[in-house]
Length: 137
Image (cartoon, rainbow, N blue to C red; front, side, top):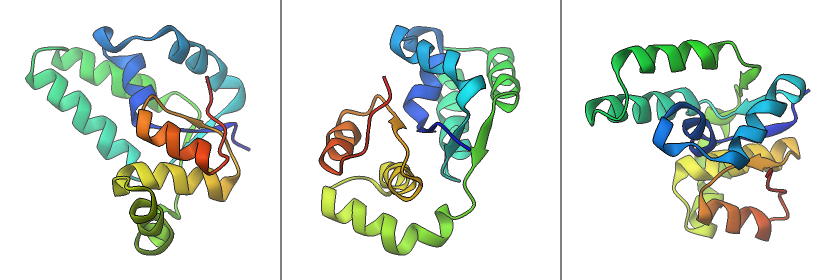
């Protein structure tokens, strides 16, 4: 079972020193016990943010590799239905709430799994509250 849906913004706050946030570190501490689930876009999104951070000299190549290694050790499950739902449920949520399809994929997963969502994205937080999805803090 999974305790929550984890989004890229929270994940990155753990990995890039100038993104650190005390509230998200609490989420990281509960992760081994609760576990999380992510949409299938999550590895690409996290990987891209790490690559851009490296290119802008915010982290080194070694830090990027260490971050990816550390993520692979955590109980984070990649959802296999994200792609199946992308053109229907996810796009409907994106259109209805003026979200990107990426953000809507996290919301769709939280709604489908009836789980809280861990995010720092203000728009996603607002829409999740409107949809009665709990925000993990």
